[in-house]
Length: 534
Image 1 (cartoon, one colour):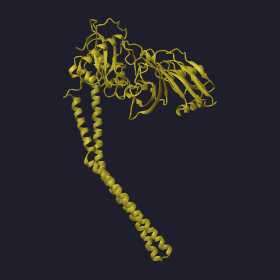
Image 2 (cartoon, helix red, strand yellow):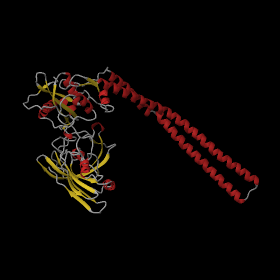
Image 3 (spheres, one colour):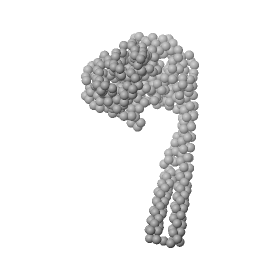
Image 4 (spheres, one colour):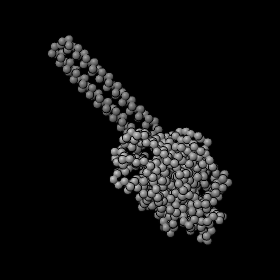
């Protein structure tokens, strides 16, 4: 049974969940609890879930106003033993005789051919032959060049000892011959190398052609697959994934688009005439190596794959407001100012500079307050982070402040409250971070391509299920402190109110509490403190 009755007297929300930033509604938490009980009660399902998987619940109403929920998991069908509990995929492309599996087998065959060619004895021998030919050519040319030098040295000695005209002419002919012979030797060796290179290039071209064929077939298969993913809106209109992304200017759909919890649940609800009430998604199982995911924590729908789809599917559905776009009172405080610099205490919810959010930035407010200055932010805080931010009042001051930040001559300290207790006391976190392009603006731990990020921390207090910490960033990567708190290789506990790496609440409990630097123009030591309001 896909529709699971929800026996609860919890008052239902008036509007549907805004999927990309939300606090789970109590009715969704109740539904999620039923799903968690089902997972733990089924040993086969638990075995698949424990390595780590995203699950979702969608609370709906039947036509007769019975309240229940739908359940889903992200990814392809893998719970054959439990397929009656979860909603089906939007398009089941895993049939063994379907076009996807058939073409996938063809691509797999190309992969085998590429692997065989790249690991073949022929390729190894041709590479070795080319290398030996180059080495022999270099050795023979160098040996003959030494012979030319030795012969020249002997001719010079004979000239110094005295020689007649006939001897001089003979030595000139010898010199011309040896120079010409060196040139001919180089040409012969270049031809030998060219022949060896052509043999190798012929085989490499065959491998390259196979890789091009594989890419073209993969791209064509992905495009064909996405055209079979026809997404519904509330009125029953259909549009395939490729056209949705194209119409929204979202680029090429990432692999796995349409297989996340939210679109699968909403698709099934629309197809069966259910009315949407609320939704939530949570992670079950082990934390993955790169992403910040914690067992039983709730997370928003992904931006890269789900946002374009849900933007289309939820047309005409009244949703909660995006809490990231709330209006913020212009109550920033100027805590230091001179003719060069201005340091403010920024409230949570106010962006440092103008961006895509329809909220006035601290920079634009300062520009309106100081219209005679060319005010620019010397560094930035996340919109939801409160505290001290330094601004320059002209281009020269901006360049100097940016130099201080780049050379790590500015000391900063943050205060954060974490959503849990830890036995850690202090330490140093070093993780390679890179953007998670599928889930912008999130960052991920990337040991291959990530950039170094370093933070020192000290636990200030542990009480009532929360931990208060002091954080000193050594580097300044995007979301560095938020990731270092939430990542299992860091403290392992997200900051309260972190809608990306933890659980949303009224605000992110992260505050820039201290900044110190030597004034680039006066030489004065500037040190400013700010107490967090949490």
